[in-house]
Length: 416
Image 1 (cartoon, helix red, strand yellow):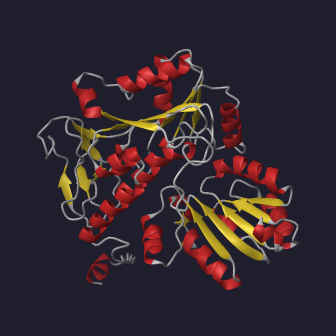
Image 2 (image 1 turned 30 degrees about the vertical axis):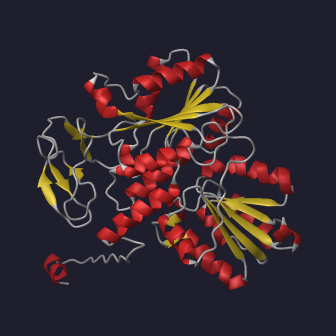
Image 3 (image 1 turned 90 degrees about the horizontal axis):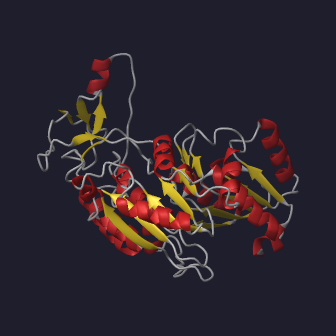
């Protein structure tokens, strides 16, 4: 409001295209029609029309995903990056850039301000805030009368010992049935971010890791485990290196399978699924989210796109089905990304006056990421994570540089 009063323009970045519908609606209700939208789902003609409106000064608020940062604003006064921690802000295709760093640079060119918002800041951004490079403001409570959800951790190793082979723990089944009876809504989150063919033990919960880099080894051709950081490789073991259990296997279950299992287990429930398959068509996100917000479904099943920023007042239960998938991704940031996803997912429950419950199902209930996420304690997570980063010489404690070489003669490359 202050920036618009000065006849300046604002760019608002959101991490997921699925958030466009509700974000545009909120800004439209507050600021009227002088809004433009830019994202990759728009046609070239629609993007051109939006850019012409922006260039002509007919739009004051530009809303979109990463690419909206390059909107042709001539009176830029403010850039807002919502969920600044999200990996979607990093472009892995040419030109490669990070929206956070690019926003700071672009704002510096024209004297604009940058606001980074997140309930779970990236470790890099929070470290800069603590060092004084960024200014830090902290919100201690939720908006309105909403309270943080109660979180329950379910040890899947115990479920396994008791003979439960289902993706749904007994406690989660009870809570789902209770919510269905009360006509309240449920979100089931399948954690697939950073998914790779890692191997873990169903008895002790440990994944097979690289002894040098402390990241999970990736399964190749069902026979070899390889570290994608240093190249360390071993044959696929027949028993768990930690506890000796024979229950060692790759992890993999998709949202379609969960939808089918939920349909059999809760036959009276109306179920929606939201993933890349169901949202590939234009308007797919809006159709699913609109139906769920109108209470045309009882259960919404999805990947990370359902846990970011959505506000459904009747959702009182969130089930996180596999917290360990991203925890074992072959990436030094796997704990950070898992913490962020768990807190974001839990935060979808109890956003209005009805209290919410979040259920975290995991094979590693004692891991500091799981424990701090269940308490939504970012400060403690940051302290423990930075100890690990300093110990292993990972950013932001240290700098890393990746050098890739390519050529026709392999021997020559090996000598470089």
